[in-house]
Image 1 (cartoon, rainbow, N blue to C red):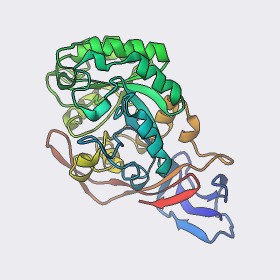
Image 2: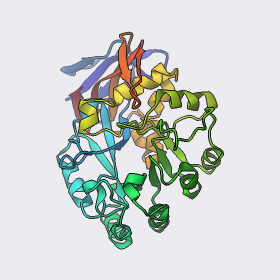
Image 3: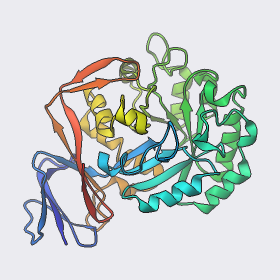
Length: 367
């Protein structure tokens, strides 16, 4: 059966269009006022359609605590068609995550934690023997299309007394596997000035807008650290990774004034910060960047075409006739939103982004 989204706005077009999905789940037509015999019509008047949102940093293993949640709760129910689990599992449990995606409606990819334990512990890099190169390479070989990168959480509470050695071992594993690194920056030690020089092209710094005064990417005057500019010149990417403790309005304004732009906007969502805040949803995180004055086109690109490009799956970031339909329907309303950052600062947005539905794998899901 055909499905049609009627009268939706695309960010690259001035006029509204109808998007027709055929019985095989492909985009059959993009046109003005399509005629159709479909019995399923979604009225998208006043709403936008984009390629399906991608959240590049989530925690989607339901049984892990505190950093875990149900796949579809942080996926299609939030307007997100693709999630990337950011290191919940190391080699010991990655098979479990790979199997769980088969029951989900959301597309799931993974970053392999360089610790074989993953987030079974929250000090997973405190013992160097847990960084098992052979076990990691075997896991990557078992799941070459599923594991898209590596994750190292370089916070003092995670690495214990090991200094930079976990990152050096992660760097070697990256070079041996050909996969990029996503590196979590948090509380010292080590400092960001030690971490950044070890990162290479396509590596990702997540939590780049954290408000930790002794370990952020901007100095006390709000200027970017020299080694940050050097890393960006090498092709290192910046990911938001909002999370419970890693997004500051003040630092976000420093970054914007300095011309340091995000590559990707992600949530670092799990059950606790979804239910209790300050994250709640990808929609709410995107609304924060609307409040900060970023253009809607740039915000949506950070959850569509940019992460799709980093993943090497450009088809996930486009809307094209003949290809599988992978779409998010959302609105930008003039209703206010009260927003909270990780430092406890509240601000009120005059406009709110809200996901209303997705179409993925031949099915429509309302949000």
